[in-house]
Image 1 (cartoon, helix red, strand yellow):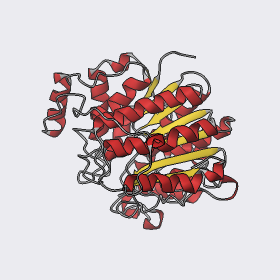
Image 2 (cartoon, helix red, strand yellow):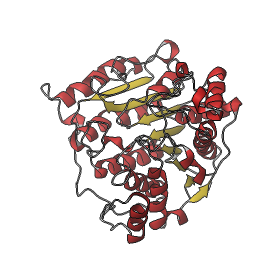
Image 3 (cartoon, rainbow, N blue to C red):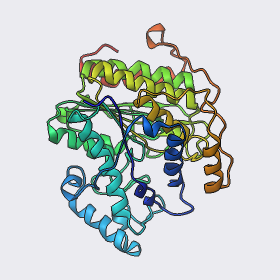
Image 4 (spheres, helix red, strand yellow):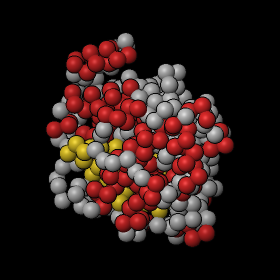
Length: 389
């Protein structure tokens, strides 16, 4: 097994572009890769591309009629069929949509294959994490569900237990739906409460069905949750479940839209807390999955100040070459930011926070909304898995 992490990248991913007024601006991908290079992290990883996924792989998650609809809209955006979620405000059709979406999915599937086959322990695709796409429809800026496709490919290759941890501000609904009745996949999503944010799912009571009952875990966080609460919730749920499940591979989704500057949501998490969760996921992969870790991007709409710094930290952590939070952002990257966006980029790789949290074992406050949310999740799913709440 290579000692170097793999970073999946292809310049063509920036063709995943819903238009100038859409919040999912592909400049966030270009700027992230630019910052990775500015810190020299491209020399600390094996930089890889992959083929776009074909129909046989897409059918592991998506219906054939939906794939056909995406192809048709890709060839003629004006003919997009809104019954498939295409040509909507959230998911406008654009020329080449199928090809760009299939490439992003291919990078995530390629990352999963490399980890499973022992070519590397860790693989990162920050262009992926498009977790809202459903088997038969686009949703929430997502056309093909690359996390679900990567997991489905792992199962096809023989994996018996795959854990998926999603810390995007939005519920990982598409991945949950894909494996709702599959006990081989444990999905854990920490997200803003569905009362206040799209997609209005991810209630604690959503725990899976049939043989998969107890395999879906949802922690619905109150709007306004900051570093201490976010980290408390993560550590109150995720480590214990992973220790019980014993995944062979850990797949994580690191949407940067939990940040207090993100314009589309209402959590108040810092870059420093996001980095702390990335470090925890890295450690948990080594503790419970023999180091097999596939790390994906996701949402994130503060495309200059937050997303590139957050995902550059992710690449550094996976590469065992973490970027010091106190590092000054290279001037060459700030020049790139100005050239591409006419904005001034951030100066350091930190928000100046030192995140801390109180462990769940240290006490439960019945008057605290965060603690109420955590307890609701633990009560809903822990007994189904034979664990104490």
